[in-house]
Image (cartoon, rainbow, N blue to C red):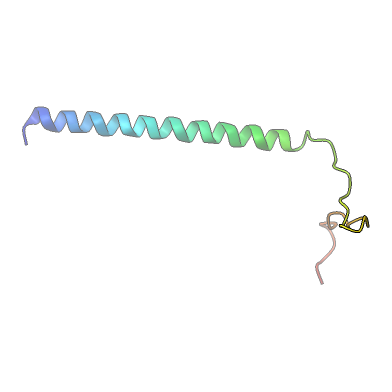
Length: 66
């Protein structure tokens, strides 16, 4: 393999790495935005069963499961 072919292959690999990095950055940005918005949501009304009974809310995290 000639030197110019090797250089071209390295350039292609670098471009693929740049594209991969850009995609990862976009995904991380979206994840960060979603996590930041998570605390800004309004509290949801408690759910109901098919019979119309209120479902229990979230468990108090300070209480044990046992």
